[in-house]
Image (cartoon, rainbow, N blue to C red):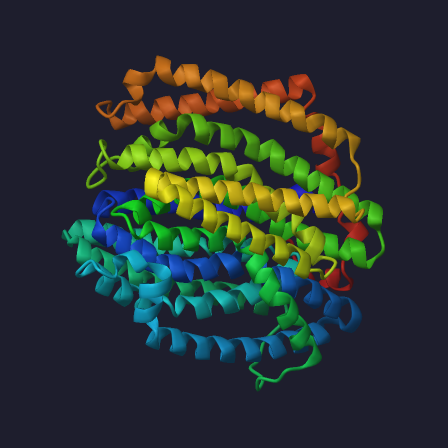
Length: 535
């Protein structure tokens, strides 16, 4: 299976999840708007959801996958099974203890960490605590599921791990549909969604557990014991969680700061859902696929293959995310109006704020995705210290910028801080790779980057004038069908213009596509390839 095909396999599952996420957020916006229950649910969900993104979208894999792959190559399936059981025993015991402690301390966590701004608002603080208490056990399911997803990714079985997150949105959409049918009030909707999150965690864990068994590895419970392999995993896992989840850590900080202003938390959450579509489809797919491939290339001493993997991943990343960033910047308001503007979501208040946040997130999108393409270059070499330092610097930049801008700009100021921190982190990661000689100079890539940027700018200018030309069709009073067809036509036309310009200027060519698609699987196939099935 080629590198691009692997990206596509993971991206297809993620795309399904993100598309369903749109449906979920549209229903939630109509039911809750940006009111107090929406703020409470989004703040409460941000806490376990941060852990979901830390673990399920690559950070745990960053520590687990290289060690699991090493066990496969040195001790075969039996050694990999033993290592997995050792990790499972320690991880489950630690998560159970952590969950009990967090549940007991939830009022303090919400007051001082998650949403300090809610503390003085009657009812809002108590609701947030209760919702967070219901949802926090989701962490156990997601963390154990992430370990099994890492096993599946190492075995090149990407589909089950990619498709499992979609069930969170399927279940929450079902809850919202039930609430709409029975006319439940906002308070009941919030609690129904919280129980739905917990149920989704159980379902997702069951899916990857069955897939691992189907792959030929049955995990049993072992008494927790700090074996050398487990110690090595823990040494790598903490920095990897911080590094891989830097975007989510910054968002958690942003949520805490935003809790000081009504509607700011839910406005950030709605904008986040839209820009998570390209970030998840491209960034997560690249991070999940690149790490095991890069680890195998380095362990086999194939430095040329490793350099090629890194360069082609960045090439693919920029090719896909630059037009998405340009479209989000230019068309944020029509997109928000189409996706959310109905029911309790107010056109005169909610739409402008969410649109401005989304536009700023768009500017940071390439950086957020590049971080996921650069960090495997460190993780595959078992270096988590350096990117952790960069992550800490990025968090400092985010906090300082957010605290400076929030009083004057409100929620958009937090988005600016997140984008700035993302670019600072991405540039530091790239700079150190170059300094260490771990990033080979790739002339074709260097020639393509400015041409891809030019293509995205051409597309953005065309969309800007087209949006103004069709302003009446995109306005608040326009029927939904007309708005939808106009937005889709503009997006489709903009994408066509981008690809025509990119191929016309040499920013992309069919040779680039063929080089990625034809990359042979046989060069890096693990010893157990004979037991694998195509997913």
